[in-house]
Image (cartoon, rainbow, N blue to C red):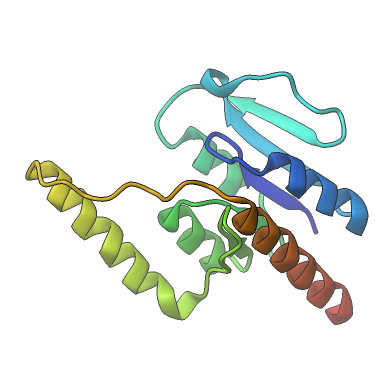
Length: 149
């Protein structure tokens, strides 16, 4: 089992790395070359081309059944769940198969509104409570997985 992070827009790479280290679970952060930065040596990094969906494709290709993927992308989360993985958002919301149709429909409607030049709300600012929820739910999911094994 490993934690794979959709790293391009992830504001919580540090907390994810800490949880992985605490639970002794490898962390792989995948980013496009456009989001290059000074990388922490505590986790594995994979850099891909700056092409649309390249990070998502790399995640799906690298993940195996039982892996935990951290992403805010509903489409990617849906693919992960279909492949037998677990998915959690940067804000610590655990994705469930039974809610994916609703989330994908919301995403579609928001895209449709933007194409019609209608204003849609952007994401709320990332706050300390989001980071704490992510840490708590990561620990919960990983602990539950350990008990299964």
